[in-house]
Image 1 (tube, helix red, strand yellow):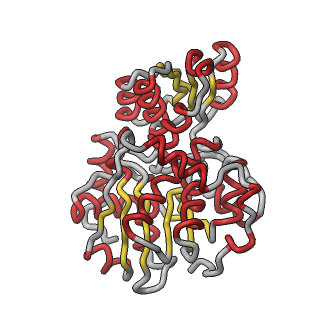
Image 2 (cartoon, helix red, strand yellow):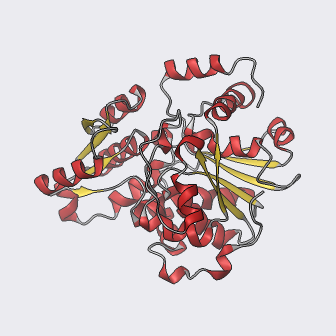
Length: 339
């Protein structure tokens, strides 16, 4: 079980690149634009986890993931000159869709650099939202370098998927809503890729539920966040391979890491097998479609290793964008398995 001490006591929020005031400002920008997604409960889930679970269903958010919050907030904060020049983003899918949709809603042209092996459903949705897609090979090419070159050529603004103050602030609004609906929590389990959602959630927890233990959850195959958290500095790893395509980052963002190091209690991992079994649980027992990355927090809860019996546990279901064929294959793989 994670250490129950609260790291926020030693933090200095004034030195963070983002504060809870920024999360509040983002919430005001998103009011009436982003969906206020439901917080679901399940007696069956409670029994399996031996706790009281509260699921914040960002799989039902616009664009199918929490990413819409940060993307819309970042685009909304642009100057008029920046808006005219357009924006560029890089993403395996959820941030891609979010930026494309945010751009369409605000009249800003968007270009998205996506890996060639991105899920087909995410590629199609990004195009439908109006994003121009440029493909790259995630194993041989550097997406950040590609974006930088395009930005220099076009004069566009880069909106990265996680290492950006306005993106972090926007993502924090999901946890803000969760605390507003569920009240104070003992534990908050958050999917961790690049760290935007975890950093924003930690800011919300510190302000609204200061006793809450905030825990990041990564795929076992890509535990750069866990290594970085324990080492005290950002560690880079080779591109990981996991079904959790939304968390296949090679390193945390610097803006995110300063917040995570100060306010997060622990970073843990789960296996792909646990994610598949959790997808099946959501489909069969709660009747919702959740992508593998969106299952990270719930899989950790079902392991019963990170909370005490009976504790109130918040879980951010980060997204539901999964290719139908892949989804069916994964559910067939889980047939007969137990969470």
